[in-house]
Length: 271
Ligand code: MG
Image (tube, rainbow, N blue to C red):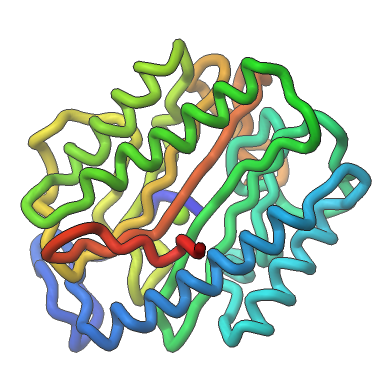
């Protein structure tokens, strides 16, 4: 989930961090719990990817997501978050993010974006995937590849000593390199830890060398949203579902990543 948070600049009590920015540096215990939460998210996504098919309703996907999270010992992170009514966000085709599960039936040729969060011991994991249903046109395959590749380009910059702007610029550069796509501006990645959305915001566009300095023990969720058409968005009357203003298809990929002394640790990736 990618809602921009506007939190106060005070870290949770007992958490080492930067009082000026509100960015928290996690303890080893917290990082371990983030790993557990992330793995539950990754495993739930694995089941969803294998299960999603034409003829299913989005509500059935939500039920699978909730069943898996609970079976693995986690708690759904989105249900009740600012009043969101479900465990899973399901956003189809021109829906970008925050789609509410319901009676919508998935069809051949759809792009189904599924965004999911879990909590273990008060720590969060958050990830999203977009899955094509059956065969899709080449331009949608390329869009899917651009979205996923831009996530990995961003993850590659998650190292101590780099800045949030390096992550943002890498995502943007990868999308631009792949085509004339719309990179969603109004929704961003985010810090994550004892809350689903913490500082800093992690935009999917930006300038290298700018922004917060990344330090070991920080954690961010990176989540590019890439449109086949323009970057403009609208919110539907349900006050949740974000769609492309031009009706073009959109994709969304997300992982939760820990900054370490070395390579980034992707908590939501499972093998
Ligand atoms: Mg998120």
